[in-house]
Length: 157
Image (tube, rainbow, N blue to C red; front, side):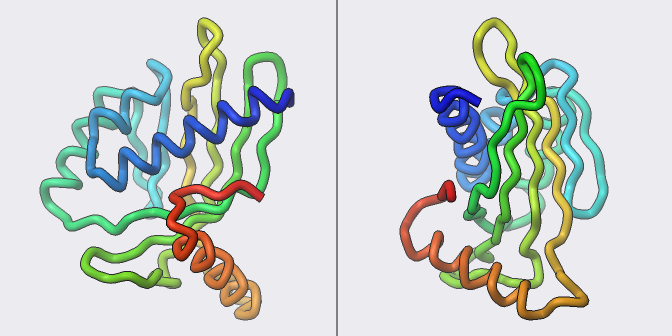
């Protein structure tokens, strides 16, 4: 992937997490394609910006959500107009300043190029529990803690 497209993909992903951290459902949903989809940590799915925005608004109204930090692991072109961002994420619970390792996750983001810009077609979350490898879980938490301490929301490797 050309460096400028890789930078743009990371920028879109960063805007997504920043919108979540601000609890801005409309800004979060506005980054998705008209048929974009998100799969939540619990397996729930939302389809299209309208459903994503309405669901996010309800989540933000009903819950004090944690803030994300992320370490981007990979950015690559899947084909013409299709790109992938893979990242490890950690969450800082409201009112705290440390990560909750129990909710570390891996996110995969598929981006589609529309009219020269990148839009999120799919955001998929899965837990990063590493049940058979506690050392990997601890290493991931250390890595994400470094991102948190850097003051960044997203760090690219």
